[in-house]
Every structure is written in structure tokens, then in C-alpha cells.
View 1 (tube, rainbow, N blue to C red):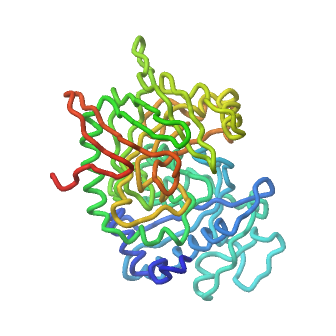
View 2: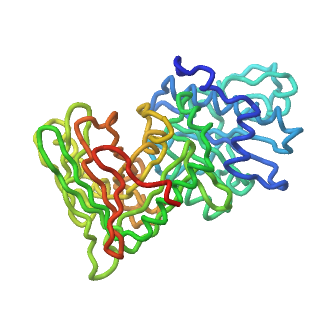
View 3: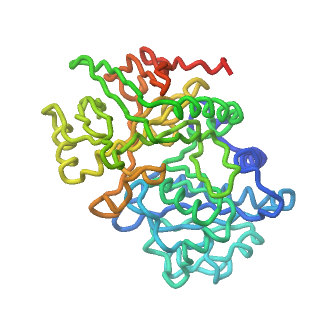
Length: 421
């Protein structure tokens, strides 16, 4: 919990219910909500933040169920084995928690595999601890993931590894509304209390401009290097506003939210290569890696540092990693929210560019373009002075189809005019 804002880092049951109402606008017939969260195993160890996120998912499930008489909605919690990487496809099975089959006072000989049923536990006023490993769960009690997608009109996924890409794909297929919360922690709770009507309005304004843009022109100033320029080709694309409201079936967005994003053109049209090119600087720890971008791909790295060599090797081994998958414009920086070192929130604060998978945003690069499911990534690089202090955004301009230019950023400050509408 954030020691500076302990009271603001808690959602009361009423605030949680209000959040559900604002974000999803559930209809009277939509009586069920699911929380979906991932578990560590022998392959990847647990962490304190991961365990706390699972406890939050359980607490929120219980809080919403305590309000079920007033709200008319019931909430269920499901667990699944982690995917091992962000935005990889989810496993085919999950477990409802508590797992049906034993009474609250019965012991468990398999850790988390012989837990009490949901109704019995609630009547007893007791829930067991969430299992700390997927290895403790009984495969015979798993349920198909597709069953969850079909059953629940609203699914919320606070996870260790991002489930955004597969949830977007599943929402389109099965028609549920989803919110993904990868890496969520209590420090982000203040961002859940923002005026999302205003956040959504601003994201809509950015969308209208991005949809008219043919190029995004970046001018960076890098400490110890100098100027670096990058052009992102935005032709043949439409953007998506993710303003924290998910009222339409078949859609999924992040929570907290507050960005508009677009996939740069990846050159899939015959005879029309992508015009995305230039130098893209990214600070890792104390080193700035300079990616050389051609035709929407990072193809090599300038520099001799240890991290630069690592990134160059990664591009050779996994070419899809270097795909420019997203231009995102986060708007929450103007709401007094600071970065906390977790991408779920940090990307909503400022302009960012992502590498890797893009099909979930309407692009061409999918898991099949990577060497293995665990190699699949969608990684955002956020250009905020507190995140990359050695990389300065001197300017970001959107060049429209009309030839006009709309400024987004000048000297690290967001300068888009939200008052003009």
C-alpha cells in the first residue's frame, strides 16, 4: 500500500461496485462477473506483488458478492497456470476458486486442490488461502477456459503476465466485455477513482486526430548521443480509444486506462512497403539502446554496451520482437498520476511505442510469427522523463492527410489542446 496515500489506496465495496457500473454499464440480465488470475508454478517462482494481486482478486470477489442482493450480480474467481510471457495465448483450462468438493472445515491433502465450494465457504464466513502454485491444483477439477468465456458477460483479469492480447481475441469471438490488469498493485488504486468520463473524452479526441494522420514524427534528444529522428507510418490504419469505459460486448480494455493507440502500417500490402524508419532510443537502466528501424522493424542496434549487445542478439534470434506494434498516447499524466514502474499504469501517462505482437490491435504480427508461445511479447517503451530520463522528446508531431501538423509533445510536455472541443 502506498504509505503517502493509504486511504486512497483502498476500494470500498461501494466504490468497487461503482467502478463496475461506470466501466461496464452492466445490463439487468448480466448477472455474473468473473475474475481471472494467473498462478506461478515450479517453472516461475511467486513474488510478493503477485501474491498480493491474487489476494486482491479474492477480496474483490468477496466484496462484490456481499453486495449481490442490492446489485443482482454474483462474482466468481478463476485461477489458471501462468503463460510465462506477456500477451501469450492463455491455457485451455482454469480452476474455479474455491474449488467445489469439500466443506470449509475439511483439510486438504493436495494443497489447493481439495478446497471448499464457493457457497459453503461464504456461508461459513471463511475462504481458504489461494493456492501459491498451479502445480497444487487437481487437473480433474479444471474447467475449459472457453466455458468461462461463454458463461460470463464481464471478465476482469488482474494478472502477473498480461492477458490483454488473448482476451481481446476471445472477447471478439465470444462477446463478453473484459478488463485486463497486468501487474496491478495497490499503488494504482487512485487511478481507478479518476473521472473516466473525462478520460474517455480526451482519448476520443486523440482518436479523431490519429485517424486522420499519415505519419507521426518523433524528434528525440539523447544524453551523450544527440538528436535521433523516427517516423511512424500511420497509413491504412484506424486507432482505438481506450478511455476506461467498456460498455460494448466483444471488447476488452485495460484498467486503469487512458490511452489511444494505433498499429503503424506493417507493409502487408503488395508493392507498398512501410515507411516507418529512423532511430528509436530506449533507456534500460543507465544505458540507452539505439534501435535502427527500417520498414517498421528494428533490424539492428547501434552501440557497444552490454544491454545493446543483448538486444541486438534478441533481434537476430526473434525478428518478430522488433516489429513496431503500437503507437500509444496516454493521457493520465495530466491528472496528477505519476509513474510507479509498472507498465499497466505507466503507459497511460505519456506517449509510448511498443515492440512485438500486434494482431490483437488490428495488426499483422501474431503468436505464429514467434519461435515459441513463451517468446511472444508486446512490450511498451514509455517516453516519460521519470521513466527514461536520458531520452528527451523534443517534439512529436502528427502529420495529417491534409498536410497539416498537430503537435502532441514539445520538450517532454504534452501540448495537445483538449480544450478546443
